[in-house]
Image (cartoon, rainbow, N blue to C red; front, side):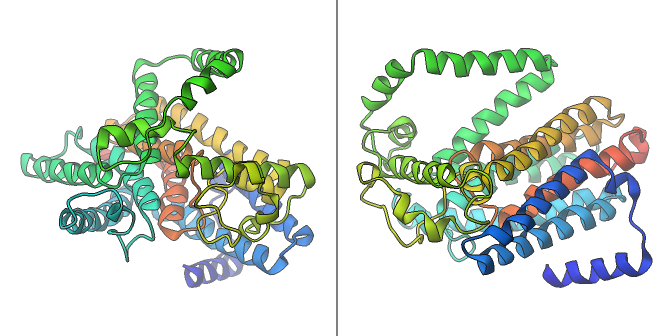
Length: 396
């Protein structure tokens, strides 16, 4: 991926050409501003070498799977290839994992490692399964498929569903429920201000009844379990579940780091090397560590806040807001039903990551970066090149 980035940048440098419609697209500008801030924070970083490596790795994913991908996707058939070149191997990994897991009786503890060596743990595995599940579902509704193809896609969807269930990744399950809600709003064409009002009412209701809500949550003592129903119930356990409590510990450390350096942060990629001394003794759990070896900030939002300050989070949120706006607008304007289905699947899959990002962060992993930036490239390519194409021209 790094080599691909260098070759492409050299080509652009010598040719002096890149499609200005993509280059000056609002989403491209937002991504550029976010990258620029990541670069700026290198100079104030507590660990400059770490931050340089973070910036370079972010750059090669953005160049490879956003900038290059938008040009590859000028051919609409390449969008399908990109998605299925990921889905098919992912399905094979899911089938392998389910088979290995079956030899352990589908117990909860083995679910943490049976996907190795393909994924490092069950949480990142579940997050990626959730990202691609809506895409497979969307393809089922295509009019251009034969009965045989629909059967194959159905089998793939069932395999991914089984893999997702037995991943025991609660955040992934929550993200799919959230994506289902977003799909409902999209299909019903609910006005944005209604969604905003519902969100504000939800936030206001939480703060209005915060004490009662917390008392109710603290009554839940159900820990992670082999029983799927009990495992679902443990999602809201903030009293005894070590995984949930450790997230609260990591978020608390991130906020303390942010309060100390609110503008520039500690430097991109530095959280795991600096958070230990910002943990509070009252929030430590049986799985707490001072060595940063059990995950990062466990949030795609608190992490940038601690590492790159308020502008680090703000520039990332701007990317998200513009992306969501563009996904919805392009979906309604698209002339091709096939392209609409692709947009629907990709948008819902991308949203699962945003929801999952509240509880975990994986944008330091190749398996998450590829779809995260690639899905945005699909959005921009469809808006710039395929939005006005007829059904026949866009069919693939």
